Length: 413
Image 1: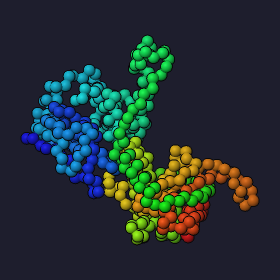
Image 2: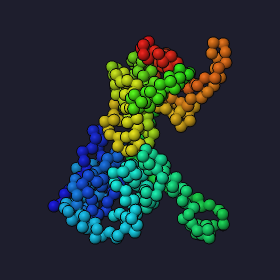
Image 3: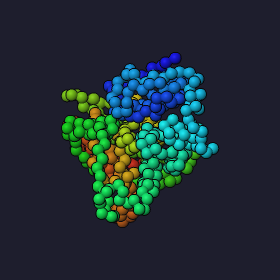
Image 4: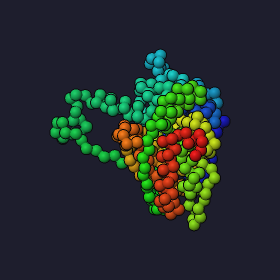
């Protein structure tokens, strides 16, 4: 029986998607729930699984095509013939540890459910483009998972092996020995990168952005983390990081200055009596901001667990639209990349964003004495249309005071 495979219902507010890559070709056998194709939207990559086991009979839409919900992608011929056809068409494995897949690539015989095969769409595309076997690439991720950086590192380390010593100029006829060729490559933006660019320009054009700065002494927070890090993880199964302290401190500041938790809609100011904090996460596809909802009602352990779970979903490409929509305030941490100071840009329609930076030991005057303290610069970018400088400065001071005396979080003072 023939089964039509169509574009699934797209997330709310998403009108179309781009067909990124087919993972099967016509004539390949497929198993039920096996991913056939990746569809990229402005926010997430959607996987289209096979509705049944069978043979991929026909592909209707090529890579790079824009599709909408309900479009016919392919036709699948259902039936047990898939197993027989697969064995008849494929040559026998050359070694006990590997076999050739439907695309002609040698792939590991490790079970498909293993961590090595839980690859993001960008990693799968890179492997296909360079005809690589994932089993030969060392993975640096959790449980040995292979990331895009692992593949790029492997390609770089093996690039010199592709040219024999006597063929150094083979790729550039007529050039002098030892002169490197100069090339350019035109690559279209991914939908996510294009959407990020659009939103950044929108933020610049629609808001009166201004940034104010302060610094915070993290001596007490670091002492708390050092003292309770191990029992916290043992008790809650989550690591005690800095982000939970900053998220909780931000909530206390937002309660004191509600306009910073507000947004603009036309000529109206929308005040929110809830605290959904966006946490900026860097991924292979670009920056994403998943939302930790009702932070005021969560414990430190719940905040840390939620952030860790959302971060994993972003990096694995399994984040959903529900995880990315909404949010009343955002925190971004450029310090993990070594940033000392920056001016974060608003995440519309929010009216403020807090920027964390690298922790640096600096000599500070404390009670008339010079002491070395772990210091961090803070930056708050805000929409000056509704937030006055006084409120922005006092909000940052509130965060500074809370973090320098974290007992305030317990007493809510």
